[in-house]
View (tube, protein in one colour):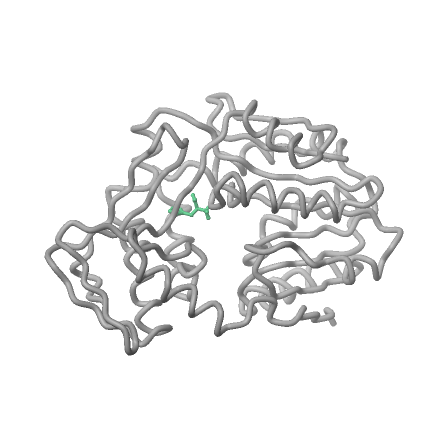
Length: 319
Ligand code: AVJ
C-alpha cells in the first residue's frame, strides 16, 4: 500500500480565494493559471497535448525517448524520484528503472491526481515506495522532512513539460533555488524547457484551430464562478494568445466582448469593452538564457538535450 503523506494544505484556502478575488479587482485584472486545473480543465489540458499545433508535450517526449540513456547517465542511482506537478504520474514511470528508483514522491496541487498516480505507480512498481505530497509550489518547497526520511537515497527532482514557464523569471529563480536547497549530495534536477521560436509557431500552439485552448482558457471563468460565487458569462469573453518577444512570453488573455458587470460574491467589477483579463504567461527560454538562470539559482553544472528543430530543451542540473 502506498503511503499517503499530505503536507498540510500548504496554502490555506481562504488566502487562495482572497488572492483570486483581489486579482480580479486589480487593473489589469488577472487570474493565476493554477485555477485552470479543475476536472474539466485537466481534461481540456490533456486534449491540448494531443493537438497538432501544441508541440511541447510530444517534442519533450521524443527527447526523453531518444536520449533516455544519456540523460540517465547524468543521474544518480537508487534514488528518491520527486515528481513536481506529477499529474497522473505517467511521465515518471519510464525513468524509474533506469535510475533504479527506490522511492517516488509525487507533489501536486490536486489530491485527486495524487491518489490516481499513487495507485497507478504502486501497482506497476511493487518494490518502490510511493509517497504523495499535496501542495502548491508557488511558494518555497517544504520537502526536507519527507525526503529526510530516507537520508541516504539521492534525490532527483523531475519537473517536465516546461511548467516552470508559468512563473515570471523572479519566481522561477526562487523555485529553482528552492530545489537547489533540497538537492543534497549527488542530487539532480531534470527539467523541460520550451524554447524561443518563430512567433507564428508559438501563437498557433496557444490558439489552435479547433478552439481547444480557447475552451481551456474560458473554463477558468467557470472555476471562478464556483469558487467566488461570481457570475461571469464565459460566452462574452474571447480567447487571445500573443507572443510578447520583449519579455519572451506567450500571454493568454480573456477579452471582454462588450461592457460587462460581474458580481464577485458581494463585490462588483465592471469590465470595459475590450478589457483583458490576464490568465497565463508562458515564458520561453533559449538554452543560454535557461543555463544562466540555473547558474543564478546556484547550480554549478548543467547538461542539455534538444530536438532537431531546437524547439524544446531538456536540462539536467547539479550542485
Ligand atoms: C502546463 C504550463 C506547460 O504553458 O504550455 C497550454 C499550459 N496553456 N496551453 C503551457 C498551457 C495553454 C502549459 N503548461
